[in-house]
Length: 203
Ligand SMILES: N[C@@H](CCC(=O)N[C@@H](CS)C(=O)NCC(=O)O)C(=O)O
Image 1 (cartoon, helix red, strand yellow):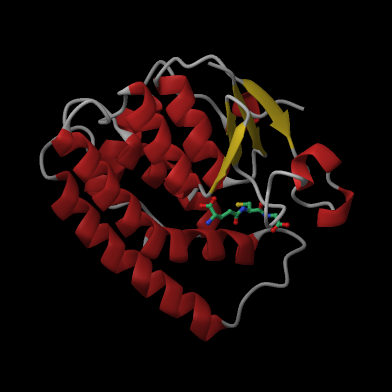
Image 2: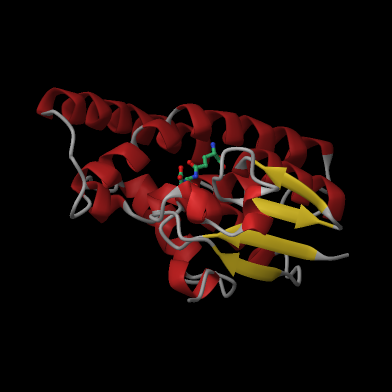
């Protein structure tokens, strides 16, 4: 089984997949793609397999898969890992992935980008709106997590990987962690397979 991940340390979407491969101990190659360079200057081999010239892309035995959520589901199902070994785990994974993509994935990346040095920023009203969305997401995160250490229960699953993608950068997004989020972040950071974005995608 040959796995090749294309990503960049500034991409939370790519970090979701890198974390899943690390947690599942799946050997893989990594190629770092400069997401700050003009898309047309990215390597031809990458442009040929990434329909929007975006990361992440995972090539699995020669077949490229794009969209972080689709990649996570494929990893879980194909290898029976991170919740993929049971019906309930796969359902939980799908539920959390859809929620994350529609909610956290639609406020934290934008808030982080607005504060990046060199970014054009966002109007104050938009930042307020996105921050309010994040606050709602925090309340719902606590409902989803309940008293378990991870969103998938006692061990992390693909849903935890998806939420980690941008929740690893709350300070960079200018927001605070609620107690439930802070507990979960501590559990995630303590995982032996956890790495920094640059360790996932070295230069
Ligand atoms: N919905 C996609 C989002 C992918 C995405 O937005 N990738 C960004 C980095 S986070 C990218 O490659 N940007 C470079 C560009 O658009 O040129 C996913 O879940 O994989």
